[in-house]
Image 1 (cartoon, helix red, strand yellow):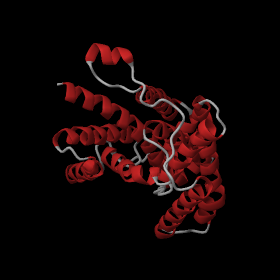
Image 2: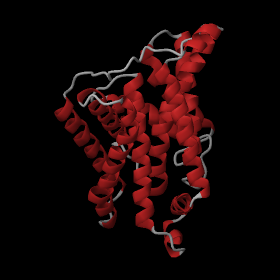
Image 3: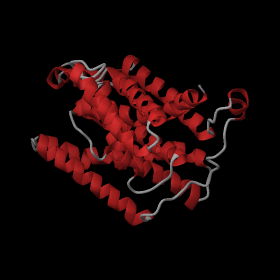
Image 4: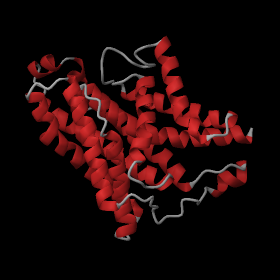
Amino acid sequence: MDELAQAVLNSLTAGSLYALAAVGLTLVYGVLRLTNFAHGDMLTLGAYVGYAINVQWNLPLALAFVAAPVVVAAFAVGTEYVVWRPLRRAGAGLLQKLLMAIGLALFLRYAIQFVWGGDRDFYEIDNTATIAWVRDAFDLTLGFYDLLTIVISLVVLVGVALLLARTLLGTSMRALSDDVDLAESSGVDTDRTVVWTWALSGALVGLAGVLAGATINVYPTLGWDLLLTIFACVIVGGIGSAYGALLGSYVIAFSQEFLVLVVDDQRYKTTIGFVIMVLVLLVRPQGILGSKRAVN
């Protein structure tokens, strides 16, 4: 029972981290029908912004939880103006956009490696610190930064849900996901909505990057290593669905952590995510919460 309870805590931590990144990824797809392969490397950028603040500049890590989302959001918006908007206006097809996303991912990854090097680095924090009352009352281990990941993700994702459901921006994003031409004829500012979508996606994955750096470590392929699992979360939940990405993240996380109880080998974690993805798609090809509407 102790092992099961510990697996639940580990799953909540991993699922919360996946969810932040997965929701950002699925929002971009829902609004733009763009599979952003640079999303993982944007997560890495967020992790290294936290590293620069905490280690290189010797400032409190708390500042990174504000700075990283801002920096990565600015990068994401910059790519909209420099790369994606010109491609859309030029009538680029799916293949061209896919190759551009891969190229952008490689550019960002090697730029990060050029600036910070290729070694694994660590924040100057005590990431072995645990929550005492959890240890004393239940004989379980819950790290301070694991709890922080769960709490921050919960608060932020509730905020995203409210934004999508109750704000003009959320209504505009959902309108674009349904029908671009109809949204424009209804008075939706398409360009503005797209820019804010990129900003929101970048902020979410930038925040996920800092949390990943605090709970794992920092290295140039951090985001790439997580990206395949994040894609699995999005597809399992229903690509384009923010709520689906959230659900898919916890489905994948729980599957991975409970697999470790049976097969004591961390290498199979990514594999089980794709096994779950295939099983879900065989039963429900659009994903668990997938629907005609791309953002919901």
